[in-house]
Structure formats: C-alpha cells, structure tokens
Length: 328
Ligand code: F6P
Image (tube, rainbow, N blue to C red; front, top):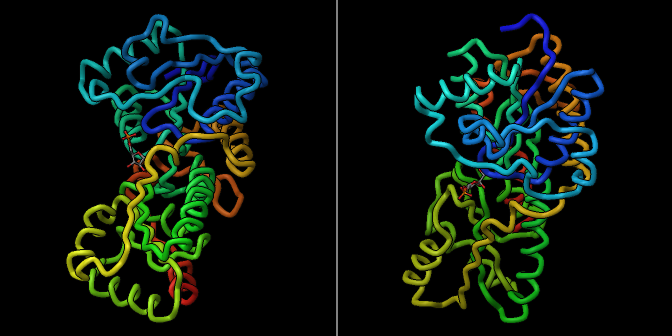
C-alpha cells in the first residue's frame, strides 16, 4: 500500500440504484479537485477482473449531465468470479498495473462483502458508498436510491388505489426489499395501506383476514396490502386468502418489481450522493479504508464494512405503531 494516494478507481456494483450517477459525478469531480487521477471501472467487479477497455480515466466533462439520470453510466454486474482467488488476483493485478492506489465501491451488501475480503487480502484501500434501494446497511440513515424508489412506489400505488376504490377491490402490492421491509413500511404509511407484511414481523393469515374483514364491515371501498418481497410472495398470500374466504374479496395482485429501481433520483438522493462522494475521496486521503461512508443525523460517519453489512438494522417500531393506528 502506498503512503499517499494519487490515482483512485471507482465502480458501481450489484443492483443499480437511483443516485449512483450523482455519486460517480461527485467522486470524479472531488478527485480532480484534489488533484488525483480518477479511473472509472465499467461493469463492477467483472470489469475489475477483465481490465483493458473496462478501465477509463474520467474527466469532469465525462460526468456532465448525469446527476439527474437513473441507472449507472459505469454499468453494474453481480460477479461470481470475484468470489474466487483467481478472479481477485486478476482484479488486483489490473489495479496495480494501472497504478491505482485506492478503490471506491458504490453498491450494497454483496458488493461490500467482496470489497472487504479483497481489501484485506491484498492490503488495498477500499471504501464503500452505500447505494441500494433496500436501505439495509448499518452506518447511514439512508442509502442512495431508497428515497427515490420509495417515492416511485408511492406514485405507482396511488394510481392503483384510484382503480381499486372504483371497483371495491382488494390489491396485494409487492414491493422490493430482499431482506428488509423499509420500502414497504414507508410506502404503506404514505398511501394509507390497510395492512403491511414485512420480513421483520411474523405474518399471520388469520390476522390479515380479520383486518380486511373489519375494513369491509366499516365501509372501506378498497383495501391495499403492501407486501415486502422478503416477507412472502404477494401471489401466494393472495391465493391463500382467497382459498380461506371462498373468493369473498375481488382480489388483484401487482408486483412493482424493477420499476422501483429506475428513474431520476429525488433531490434528497442527489444531495446525499454529492455529499457521500466528496466524503469518500476525503476519507481515502485521510487514510480511511475497509469502511463505508454514511450520514447519521446528517453527520459524516465511517463504519467498518463488516459492521455495515452484518449489523442489525431494526425496523422502525414507531412507524409500525403509527401505521397500525392510522390503518383502521
Ligand atoms: O438489492 C436491491 C434489489 O432491488 C432487491 O430489492 C431485490 O431483491 C434485488 O435487488 C433484485 O435483484 P436483481 O435485479 O438482480 O434481480
């Protein structure tokens, strides 16, 4: 490991998230501001292993006009090869051959696991910027993309609610969140859902049935159940309920899926990306490594990558309580 940093590489990895481009722009421009060269690595760890044309020096102008764009101009990938010794050796060789002193990984838990193993194996400085719509990392109140994805989900569900109430229908709407129910909880409160199923809470079909029957008895013209994909399948739970009720409800299922991952980042995600990019470059200059940069109560925090990944991120009990009061 070199004492000072003069050339930094940046990549995006795992599921894309709105705000990744804004973070790339911030990393590129703050690196140039501090007189470092900055290399964009295309297609995440796959590009790191492949090298060659997957490495490209970026200028301030190369990142013009991307702050408002969804997806990632560096593209992304989930790489199995990076989990192997041969893959990691190749990635390390490419970094050394290109005189790169440090690596910034913009991604989520899977990407940070790879970054942690790699950084320790080769004593190579790596720093993570949290970007996942799931918001499931410890060390930042918000991860990039979460605010945008939730707003996208809310807008879509509002539209579904219009048609649901016109037909007295029960909709099960599945939102993303592989292990956590953050998108589900915020969406449910924002659209006034009748029920919410999240991985953090045991789920009972009897309880769900009671809630929906209570709503119908209290003249609700529609019911919306938000299902986090990590809790159960919306299709299966709708089928279970219909079976128990002999199809008493006019039931429909919508899976929002990847539409939640695309689109222009919100103002919140853009500002978060701008701040985290600057802090990431400054963190590397101060010798931070094997950490994720985040904001807690709007203050910069550097959290060890392993804590960011493995720490328990609790569901917001207060929001669950508010939801249960207001959904009657
Ligand atoms: O981690 C972000 C996420 O969008 C999850 O919510 C979802 O389970 C997963 O990625 C989907 O991944 P893929 O796009 O590879 O199917």
